[in-house]
Amino acid sequence: MYPLDGKIEEAFDRSDVLVVEADVRGEAGGERQRRMLEGAMYPPGDTIGNHISKDTIDLLTRRFPQLSLDRVDRIRPWALAMTIAVMEYQRMGLDYHHGIDVYFLGKAADEKRIREIEGTDTVIALLNSFSDEEQDLFLQYTLLDLDEIGTKTDRILRAWNAGDAAAMEKIISESLGKRPRLLPVFDALFYRRNEKMAEKIEGYLNEEGQFFIVVGAGHLVGEKGIVERLRRKGFPVEQQ
Image 1 (spheres, helix red, strand yellow):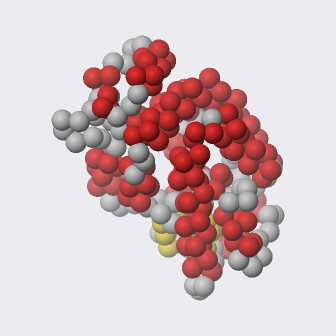
Image 2 (spheres, rainbow, N blue to C red):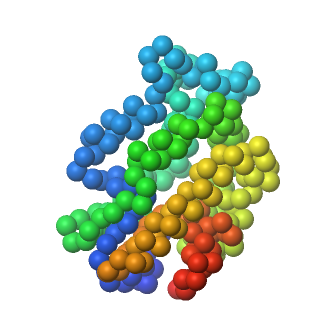
């Protein structure tokens, strides 16, 4: 992805405010991490085994025979799913510290105002609002998808670099075609968040200054993505 297209860097240079989903490099990073860890864990006396199906436990054991349940017994299913995905990305050579949000947060430093479009606490509250069945599906899908994650990630990166919004939408939505039971999870993680993000961005458009907004690419594409939501509200949106 680096060096980024000059148009991206120029747009950032012209901006007054950097907006990210969550400011992961804020001064209160230690406190933020503590709250994240707390939100990802069941309270004492409760365990993941009380909340996921036997099929998912068996799948977890088969995929990670070295991982005993007592090592992850208090981790909520959504947090375990994300941890497994991150481990796989790291195994593929992808580094979180080179994420585009981290990159621009580093560049903004003391030069630009930084705003959060959601914040970590909001996302954790959303994930913890999933029912046991939805969290079970989330973890199960992550485990079943591991064999394809490398190929899918390569396709996503190619689509992103080419600015191919249609290809990006197809890659992201094809999971629903394979596993329609994931719709409630998909709806919460993308569609409902897209609506709130678009409302927040509409508010920025009524403020002074130029806002440079960084969100996950999956939130930008499709009929229910941020771009189309803004277009339907009458805002001119142009892909450069």
